[in-house]
Amino acid sequence: MKYALIDNTKAEASKGAKGICPICGSELISKCGDIKLHHWAHKGIRNCDPWWENETEWHRVWKGNFNSDWQEIILHDEITGEKHIADVRTENGLVIEFQHSHIQLHERNKRQDFYKNMVWVIDGTRLKRDYPRFLKGKKGFRYTEVQGQFLVDFPDECFPSAWVGSSVHVIFDFKGIEEINNPNDWRNYLYYLFPKTNLRESVVAILTRESFVNNIVEGKWFKQEQQQQKEIEKLLIKNIPILPQRQSQYVLQRGRFVKRRRL
Image (cartoon, rainbow, N blue to C red; front, side, top):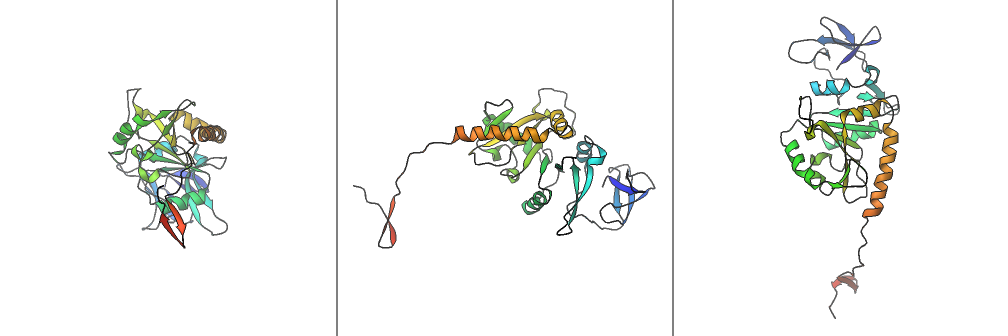
């Protein structure tokens, strides 16, 4: 983890330092080598939060966009006694989880149920096939009346299928920590897959990193989310197809269904 408690104050790891785990209260030792990111670790193999994963530089860069007071926040379920560390939790109660490694669906659902109001930011550079698939699939994006928002018929042809159909907000980052000098490179943007709705298509928005971070920091995410939901509802109304009534091929006769005879 990035922070430990030293004299009840959040502190980053430094050589020779010792701290206290903010979630379990046990002693932590600083790991400050030349290869891995500087971090705190429990003595032995103890891991007091099973959801916690080893951080990459990508994690640290993203978390660094937010105030340290919002980073690594412990949330507690008073009913079950369960405790977990959120990567980022804003003063408005929004949790942001930065996910690099693969995560099982059941664990993802558990986190969503626990955090409730949350956003996933996914490292799209982990698998080499993800960005080429996105480039190919985005050719099917269809424009809407809302600038920067698109309809996608087959989102699994653009994004990892495990995240398609999510009930919470998912944002894909295909750039990672790479320096890209071409301003027109598609990896410079984030791709926001809206939570699944009754709309036959999925809704995707393109946004800059700066706008995403600023909306979170300035507390505008909730207002923007409400406005986006209204726009989606408009899309729902416009895209409901009027289908002709079709008569069933089968009719019930003597307690069983038989195929209808043509006249």
